[in-house]
Every structure is written in C-alpha cells, then in structure tokens.
Image (cartoon, rainbow, N blue to C red; front, side, top):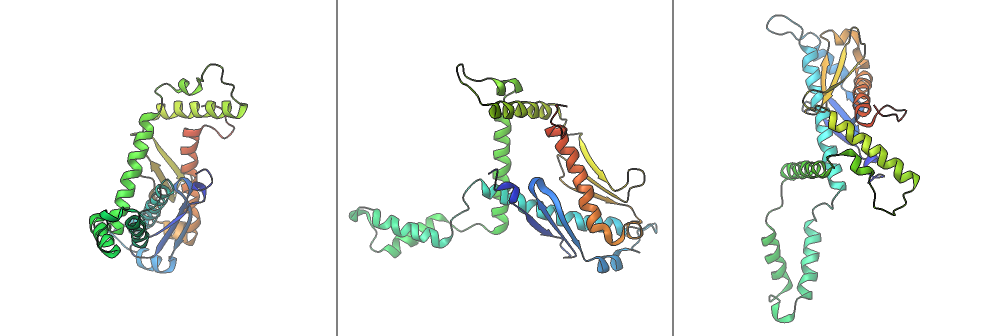
Length: 260
C-alpha cells in the first residue's frame, strides 16, 4: 500500500466540459485545465440582479465540480486498492464451471450450462456504475470509522511494548511519530478548523479552503478575469497546495519533525 497509494491519480471533468482537474495522493490538486477563451467569453461580463459581476462565482463552481469529481474517483481507486474489485461476468462463469465439476456427480445439475445459469441468477443483477461508486464510498467510510474507533484513547499506549521485546530504532521512531500524530488528531476540532491558501494575503484573487466537511472550496475575486487571467490554471493548484500544507502540518507536525 505504501507504494501503490502515492501513485494513484484521478481526473474529473465539470459538467460543461470546460474544466478538467487531476488529483493525486492526499487528494492534492496536481493539474487544472480550463477552456479559458470560452469561459472568459461566457462569464467575464455576466452580471446578477443588482448588476454585480457574478462570472467569477460561476467559474469557481465549475472548477469546484471538476475537482470534486476527481476526488470522488480517487477515493474509489483508493478503496479498490484495499480489496479485489468485483469479478467480471466471465470470471464468475469460469468459477461456476470449475465449481460444477468439483461437485459430487450425484449433486450436479444435468448440464454445466444449467449450473452456470442457476448460479448467475442467484448472484442477482450487477450493480450500475453509480451504485457501485456509492457502495465503494460507503464501504470506505465504514472502514475509516472502524479504524478510528480502534485507535487507542491514550496515545501513550502506542509506545508500550511487551516485556522482553527489543525494538529496533526505526520501530521506536515510527511509534513515537504515530503517538505524536494521534495526540494532534485528538486536539483537532473537526467542526471548526479550516485550512486556507491564497495567492495574495492582503488582496487575494484566489482563495482555496479545505476542511473536514469539504475537501475543496474555491472563492474567486469578481475581477479575477482581469487580475489573474489565463494564469488561473497555475494559481488555483498553488493555493490548494498551500491549504494542504497547513493541513499536513497540523496533523503531521512541522517539517523539521518537531512536535507541535
């Protein structure tokens, strides 16, 4: 898993097809593609009921939808990495074929084809892609919930070992790091904490926010078309990386490895 998970990526598209996002390990936004000329022509001068510019808000929602679609695909890919995917119809039929000939002769149906038909009917209809995605996401959430419940209530329990067991320095270091991480997690108020990345602290044009309820939220200044322009495909991932770095520091500690 340590080798597989960092290599997983997923790409999502907005419904209009004018934004495409790719996310990688930790749901980091690694690439953003925008059909800039068409988006700018459609949205730059769009105004709301009070004659206010609203094109940037529409653009933010378009980008968000592409990123969230990519994150959903990545979570399914991560989920699949932890278990074998559902067997194909051909795989099942091969299994039922072998199963037929493994049965005692007096228990076999008249023909192998009949056995395969009976077993296929008992299996039921295959889930649609959407239902399979929902099932995978639900299974992933349940596994995460079980893992969290299994964590020791006292981080110091991680550091306790059986009498007489000699641990290598690497194992000791890993256990100490895990204990520090768990202690930080215990202190996090998941309902209030937010991680923000901006292109300019004083007068931002792009603000990316991530928290425990939304992995990616985007705000764009009403004048973003003139301020940032076609550089948006580079600026948004940069701001997302800043927000993610703040999240990583909160959970994992400063980069120098010292405890918070």
